[in-house]
Amino acid sequence: KYNFCAGPAALPEAVLQQAAAELVDYQSAGLSIMEMSHRSPEIVAIAEKAEADFRELLDISNDYAVLFLQGGASTQFASVPLNLLGDKTAADYVNTGQWSKKAIKEAKRFADVNVVASSEDSNFTSIPAFDSWNLNKDAAYLHYTPNETIGGVEFMWTPEVDVPLVADMSSTILSRPIDVNQFGVIYAGAQKNIGPAGLTIAIVRKDLLGKSSSHCPTMLDYQTAADNDSMYNTPPTYGMYLAGLVFQWLKDQGGLAAIETINCRKADKLYHFIDTSDFYANPVEVASRSLMNVPFTLANADLDKQFLAESEQAGMLNLKGHRSVGGMRASIYNAVPEAAVDALIDFMKDFESRA
Ligand code: PLP
Image 1: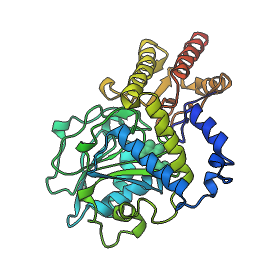
Image 2: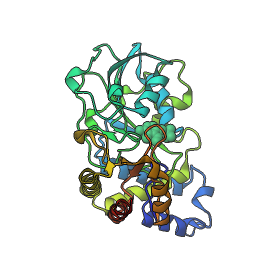
Image 3: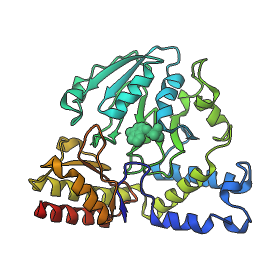
Image 4: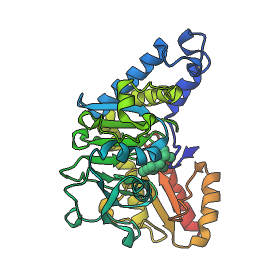
């Protein structure tokens, strides 16, 4: 079966097979990884390799700390202002969808939030032109959401601003190469392209560490994780192990340039099919369409239920769109094979011909 879930999302079959084989007795240690101390040589080695492979995949320099955290991307909505405001009070945010809105709402608890641009008027189907952004030069940072998982809107460019750039990359990280040096902080919940839910990764430029507010909880302070190799408390060891297997799998695929080629092919096929059909539609402006999340509607919404029931029967799972958008959504993360997209298009054609 093919899993098009937006998250927790599909994992590579090879990763699941390896994890299953190693679950009960890890490398003849007589223990499961889940039973091992985070101070054990096995877990320390797993964590070190996962970080090294992640750094290699994204070409992350030593100017950045890589932090394995918990609490999901949603906790980062608070951690970012708590760590980055320093002696400033203002922060800039771009509003391009439901996840931007949640980040903005949380940041308002800590900062004077200036929404520099919003596409809410167009129902989040576009990205406001950069030259229209109302940037504040005194902002502590600018936060944006490079890929809006729900709306299927993705920045194919990186804003160039004078303040540290903060990106919620939950649903785009590892889908293609990026230049980490353009960012102050990148964070992502793991449950799409990294691994299982429960792990969160933050990439923090080291000069931004040590500026947290005095009210910042110890566990949310990036410095705590950086000083303790992400092991201040008990980290999500099993999630780190699985993420490590995913990073190795990605390296085996040829790294991010290779996976980008496949991802572009998958997305292009699906959008092309949708655009050439009178029955299906995607509302997002062409230049801002997501590589990872493809929402689409049927010409007749009364057929949505039937489409979902039949697609599920045909082995294509979790195609229901988010309740705020309606219709369908195919999330085609790294671990969703091209064959899944081909099968989906075949099914959509067949459904259309019978509708
Ligand atoms: N940001 C984006 C872009 C997301 O897609 C999600 C979850 O799907 C979140 C934040 C929230 O992540 P979490 O559930 O890890 O808190």
